[in-house]
Image 1 (cartoon, rainbow, N blue to C red):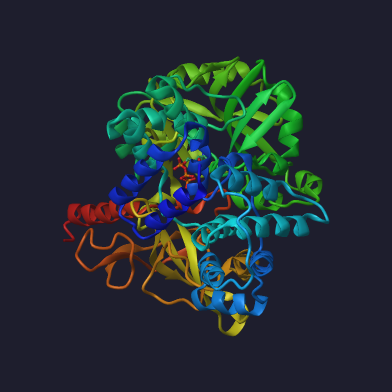
Image 2 (tube, rainbow, N blue to C red):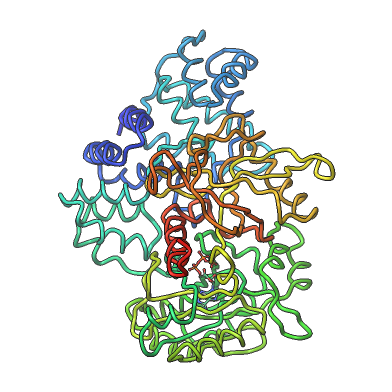
Length: 588
Ligand code: ATP
């Protein structure tokens, strides 16, 4: 397939943020795509080469790309850098530069999607001392044969700056329309995506074997399943109202969610955002096979740091010490953990997703043999508010953050947040009723003791419809000096010359960051705001929502991707909730 078809499509998609138009462009593109290329197209349009869980990173630095552009165009590096500074987008700068190309090249080879994809794949896999030279050679050979528009998109993919604003749901809508004639069938695709986490594979299946093929999608060992999530409740009474007469309560431990895929001695671990995190937990890899009484299994657990002497659970922050590439063995002994199992999703070659909670819990207790390291998460069957309160107190006393409440007769709903699971946290009883996970989008330099650090951060929620990050508040309290140093280390490499187009903020920051880091904040209230962009125009025209008196809780949510941050939808619910409370108390 000619790469120019893809470049033209990308160009059209870049010019709109409207979901319906994007869907239409995607449908047209899919209809022109040969079936054997469709998975590649689906990865490329998300700026990837393979599904996230395979961890394939292109990792090309701007400097190297600039050298490659210079090599293939004959234009000096300095001039390319100047052009880049003007717009802050190297892909676009390259297309302008290549228009003025001084070197004549003969188009020796056609640029096809297959060739671009394979070359990018080779680049991603290069390692070692000569890898930089080889990367440059591959990039300039592609640029030699590409027209300016094609070159700009090749570079954007390479640098990770392709932002078409296409949410996964939009891709699934378009696949359903293109290959089954109706958007209604997206549900079937969603199920396949939720159990495989591989949108490319879903696309290939619907293109080649239609809906029947997609319906047969099965859980695959070592391919992560998208996690089931919980809705929040503020009180025991609200929980009983929503859950009915009898349900399960489990400790909500404050650690890292881990999905374990186990077969014999082979163990692969995935995080909540489906990143392969096996290297952070060599102890799990070593110890868990002994505890599993099955040929193979997919299990979910919370890995929690513990005080070795007392067995008490320690806060999530302690696990941060494991987020390192080197000397991980030292971190393993210094910061011991236990693995606390709460679900089983697959066992002895069969999916358990359709089994109800009660049967899954029974199976889990049979399959996982408890020892000092592997545990079953404490669970009790509860019937009323008193039972919940009792168990909540036990859970808090043991160092966990609250309870998860689960319906006994419901299946595991991969990839969705619903009412079958509820979470009741201690801190939900604060003024706002909940903490929020927000994306750091901008920074302001500190004064006084904070000079040299970012003293205040600009935070955003995630707008699922637009696939953007909308500003919601500035936060400058709750940071210890240590937090500020740590945040500076993490944020400094994320500074960008120009504000990322997915950031939606009227407020100007001293520096803009790539929207990647998620931190937790609490606030006293949500108010209407003329400046902030979160949920703009939904409650009132020309007003967004903002947090009043926001405070950093000390939690950096490394396990969350920016798209897992609190959404505008959630903030609207909290805003309406607080109005209802005020109303009930006759305050308004
Ligand atoms: P939070 O910000 O509360 O951690 P989240 O958005 O990460 O929420 P939720 O589904 O809302 O995800 O809350 C569930 C999280 O709580 C899980 O991701 C998991 O890490 C953790 N957890 C702790 N104990 C349990 C348990 N018993 N069952 C399920 N999840 C648990």
